[in-house]
Amino acid sequence: MKKTLACAAISLGLLAAEPAVSQDLETIGSGFRSDWVEDAAQHGIRFFDCSVVSDERRKLTAEYSAMHYGLETWKLDEPRMIVLHGTATSTLSSTVRIFQPLTLGGSRPELAGAGAVNVSTHFVVGRDGAVCQLLPLDMQGRHAKGVNWTSFGVEMVSKPDLLITESEAEATAWLIDRLVGEFGDTLAHVVAHRDMWKLNDTDFVRTGVDPNYKDRSVDKSDPYADDFDKVRVEVEGDFPEALQGLDSFQRL
Image 1: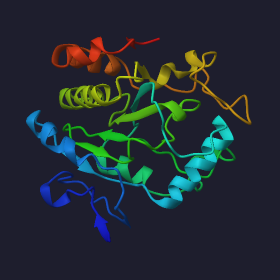
Image 2 (image 1 turned 135 degrees about the horizontal axis):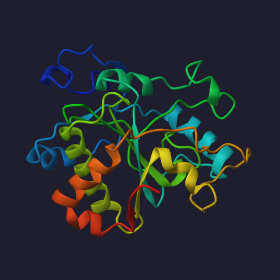
Image 3 (image 1 turned 90 degrees about the vertical axis):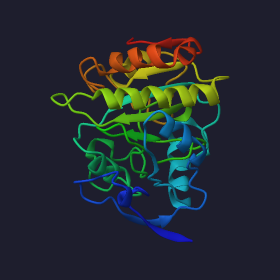
């Protein structure tokens, strides 16, 4: 069964005053965590299915994983970290649209030759704290060089001159709590995208066919300013058990 997707919630006002995010795609088996909706609501958070998953995306993800990690699978097994990102965009709808195309096309020439599948992330958190899930939690994304095989991606709508809101920090903290609660046996670290280069010499980062396909110190600046620390403060205050369940949640 197909349905026109407007982040599954346009009629509920998720993207009020923003252009509709729509895509005709197969949503059966999207992996949306509908069982999280009620808990999100109890925390004042709207949680929506914005799935971009398809059989073809799984196929291209497996090809990417084989190229860079030596894993001929799209599956995300035993995730070990959450990578927090800033989107360099100003709205939830414009951010989701970036991830909807199946392939990169010409949008990211610096990534040309490193795999056809489009960039993707598991969650996007909007300025008002609304959360969109784009990928199932058993599927690799393409959000951070070297570690997609073992990480969840969480994108916070922000820019260097538009830092995250309190609502975003609270919703991201809630997401971290949910993920740690479910994957705590393996999930042990929350890392800033801007710090990924500092992990290049660890077993987290795999490069596959191109040993130079990894971040450099000058490549990333997100999350911006003190946004990462804002989220940590929210986790510490609202979800201390999640923080205690992690080995590390700090800038590297």
